Length: 372
Ligand SMILES: Cc1ncc(COP(=O)(O)O)c(C=O)c1O
Image (tube, rainbow, N blue to C red; front, side):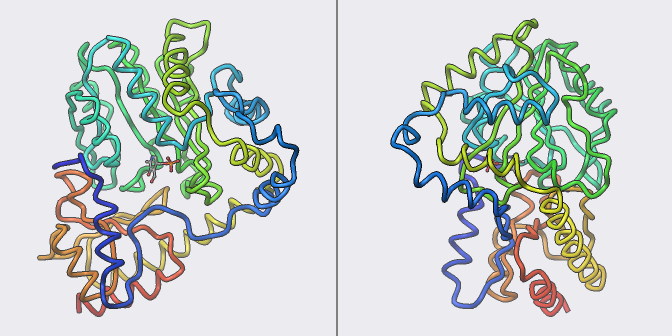
């Protein structure tokens, strides 16, 4: 698979040019409202004094780092605010390789394609770890693949695209494997608010110096365009303290600092948004997942029922998940999904549908008609 050019834009462009109405189930950008408190924060920001428009600290606004640290149960010194989870992943993976303890990156198959694209960018060898039908990763597979050449193991739970939520024991074992080989476990937890199993546990629960947790407000607050995320690095007084120092420098030299108004508004929302906001969005998604998977059942398709995140993978007999078939679904069914092959060889027969559209029911009807 060529991961160099992300395929999302190709599919979105194709769907945009279609001559018919298309339900967009391509990208993972939430379609619901951000918290009202976040809008209030942005409005208030517009009327602040001129100095509010100056650089924020490169590492992130102090009260925002404090708010994140408090929620994650870590010391503030470990938190670096980034341009979304994307930059957090980039810094974590790059510094893990740069520290010189191996160069290899262990990824799962299927994989969130940006990790694989980044491995290309870093010119680092990759090793893909198979997962089971439901996307679960067996730590024994990782143990077998890891060696002293391993620089970084990247995992994502709740998972895009499989919807798997890894049990706490899996993450504990992965952290132990990273420790054994002097590698770094990067745990991308950007979908942590979308756990329907109640089983999600952060990799931070395992007190390991070899874990970097990445996250963002992009999905949880429905603000993929604001670009506020963060990484929690190992403690400053531990053996892996260099990771944070190096990431701070790379962040400063590449982006200088994050957006001041965006961080201000996210901080307001973090402090003042009631739990109902998140619960309501989970309920909405549970309902969409049920609608969509019921229809897939009726169509006789194989599919994954996500325990978390907001993606469903589906496989239709005799209709593999290629780019050509994605284009047929756009043209003939009026539904745009992602080709499974964009996520790795193991899911080449599958499609991935993002349930972040109010038109899930319409999409299911269109698919049912197409596959009749
Ligand atoms: C697993 C995963 N990590 C990171 C990101 C990017 O997050 P952000 O928009 O905060 O950079 C996404 C977006 O789809 C994702 O699915």
